[in-house]
Image 1: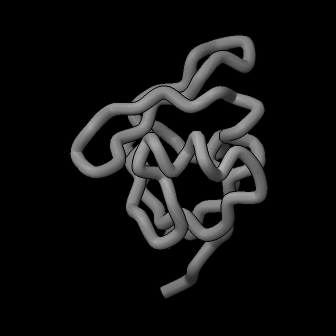
Image 2: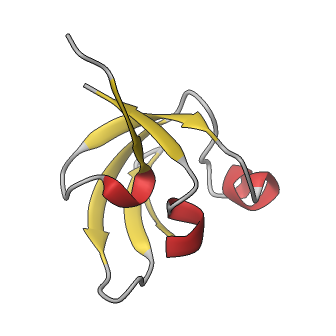
Image 3: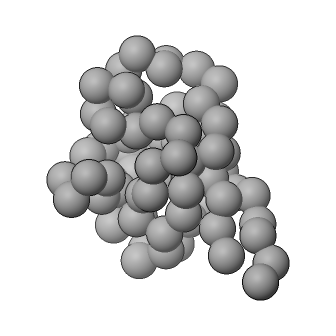
Length: 76
């Protein structure tokens, strides 16, 4: 099993991963349920650097593209 590290913005639709690092906006992301160790699943990415929509804790949440570019996710 190979573990890869990606940006949240790099996940493909349907791909899942575990949040690894949160280098910014920790309070906002914590309110959305996104914190280290949590599983996220990519639902969709909006065009032209729009928000990404992920499922975390069985809830769909939108994350700003700029933030999604900084979040590190571990995938298999």
